[in-house]
Length: 129
Image (tube, rainbow, N blue to C red; front, side, top):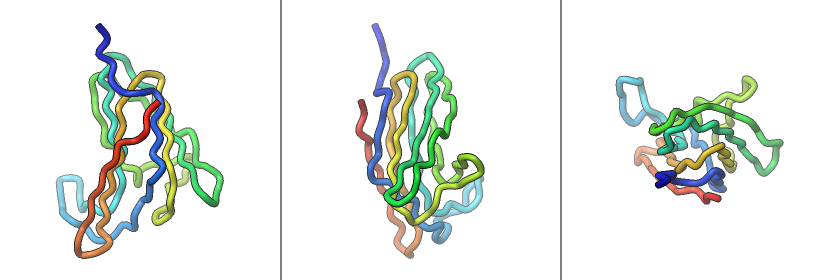
């Protein structure tokens, strides 16, 4: 019996990397600022080869951010840490994310906004195919 979960393609139409804002807490990883995370589960035994493309309204896409994810693992990939060809993703600009994988994965997008004194957190499942 197959235990595969998820889909090979995920789309997140509403992404927005907020301004860095104010630190909302200090952890062993340092101060935590506003960010987005792409949360992924690979429930398969095999390694997932993942490609991310970032699409914008008024500029060319930033494409082909690639990484491998071992089987039976999860990851919370900080979008503000991503660089493609030495280019970081811009903050305070709407964009969309397309995730492509060679095997089924489950993906979710989370956003922490610390730009005001009242922090905001949101999370959304993507559309999978």
